[in-house]
Structure formats: C-alpha cells, structure tokens
Length: 301
Image (tube, rainbow, N blue to C red):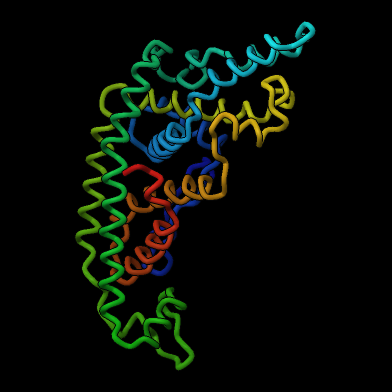
C-alpha cells in the first residue's frame, strides 16, 4: 500500500507481488480523489464489486427492507415507536445525491446516475467483462499446464512448486528455475489486451461516474446491516436471519470470491509490466493460484 492509500505493484525481477485487497473506506477515498475521469485501479475495483453486489441482490435490499418493515408495522397490535421512523428514513435515504463523491467534477449530479442508466451499465459490464476475465484465467491455466509439462522430473516439479522465488534451492541445492525454459506467455498478454478492450467498452461515456455511484450505493447498503434495531423492525431475529430472509449471502465463499476476483484482475492488468522471464514465471504462477480460488460458475460467465 502506497502513502496515498492506493495499491501499487512491485515488478522487480526478484520479487513481483500481486496487489492486496482494498477496503471499502479506502475505495471510497480513492474514488473521490481526482474526479474519477480515467479508467484506473479504483474504478476497476468498483466495477467488479458492484457486479458481484448486483449478482448477490444487494441493490434490491432497500426495497425489500421497506416492504418487510411496513408489513411488520401493519400487523402490530400497538403503534410503532419513534425508532421505526428513524430507521426507515435511513433505509429510504436518497442515494441520488452524490455531491460528496463527485465534488471534483463541476456539473455532475445525481441525474446522470439514474436507475435506468445504472441497470443498463450493469448489463453492459456483465456482457463485456465476465467473459473476458474468465477467458483470461483459462488461458493462464493452459500456460501453467505447459509449465508443468515442461518439467518431466516429478521431484523437480515439487521442488519448483515449493520454492518459487528466484534463488531458491531444493534439498539437493538445485535451483529449479535454471533447469528449464519458461513457456511462452504471449497468449496471456493477449488476454490482458482483450480485457483492456472490454474495460474500454464498459467505461465509455459516463460509465465511470455511474460505476462510482453504484459502488457508493453498494457500500451504503452493506452498512444497513450494521443498524442495531433494523432486524427487529423488519421482523427478523438477528442480522444473519435478515440476510437469509432477504436472499443475501454473506458466506465465506462469496467474500472470498470478491477478494480473489479483484486481486486476479488487478494482477492480470499489471502483468505486462513484468518483463523478466523468470520473474514473470513466478508472477503468473502466483496469479494462477489467486484465480484458482474463484468460483467461476457463480459469476454466470
């Protein structure tokens, strides 16, 4: 993590590293900075998160919560209390006011991020991005198979997988990296170019700002689950039961998919900066490990 709070990638020949996860607050700060007029890491991270949030049904949560709260209130045998109205006001908070988020862009206001434009953008990003990302992993998977095939000695393969850093040796003092030629990674680089084109198509027009608005919405909606009295007011026993009743999954698998997908895409886009063959081999092997943690079927590719 750099001093300005953004993720930077180290691409030295000796120790290339994949990007780390960026938290919600850090993402919001990054989206606010500079007016969000370019396709950069924060907006790409935001796009992936809003697509996953949409797949999980988060953008339907406010309407479902209001319906649940109203249904419970209508069936009470006594008047609702003051807390009902306070919490309800938070749930119906106008997300079309993005002044804080877009203060650097003169003239931009909530009308650009209308529900219709948000839905159209989500559909467009899903159409362009998911397939390009999954295709990149399949190409990376083929590259790794080629790397494994290039090592005919099973003991040497095990030594490589255990000791991936340049200069590492096995128990016999052998350096696995010097004993075979890394497979050509041109197809992986082509997959990066394809993904970059998909990003350009997805973020044409006002899409960057609408993506930021969607990310703002998603983070705010996630915060609703932290409101202490909300489950009771909506007729649920606790936050977990409320998530289940609303059809929202917060399972470890869902959380892991978000983290690894973000790291995989950021790492893939940064790969062209790794120009040393041996460093690239380590980098791609680490990138494959990240991508292999993703439940690709859950993305609906």
